[in-house]
Image (cartoon, rainbow, N blue to C red; front, side, top):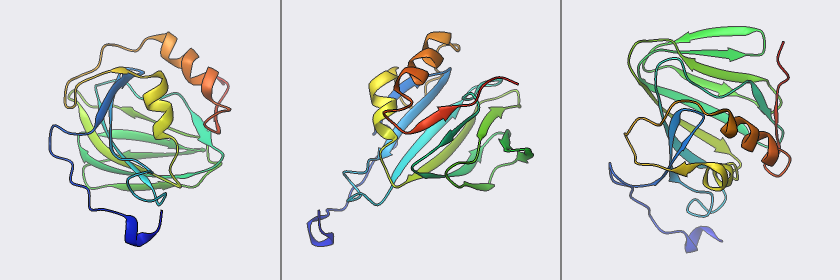
Length: 160
């Protein structure tokens, strides 16, 4: 798709494609197809004491912008206690995870560059509703993530 073929996209507060996965609510706001392959933008609603297992991406960089709540990011050996307004860039290959360490939900945006990871959420997530808390963590989600990890070029880190 060329730049002249791209069309503006507006996603309203109830829009996007939403799934529940690993106890979180993920909404794809802009897919790679919508951005002409430039990036993917998602929103995450992260309940207290949830977040994905440690992992790294082999094919894309990831950027997080914390909008609400408090989240602890593990970036390799570094721990960052993020407050609203914090932006975190994670280059491909860096093992990372995040966890909501506050008593209320956290909300953040995250972007993949280049796009493609949004397919994983659509493939293994359970249909959800934006801004609605997901059901508690189900280990079947983690097993599903492991099953599609090579397809989406990411690796779940082994437990320490």
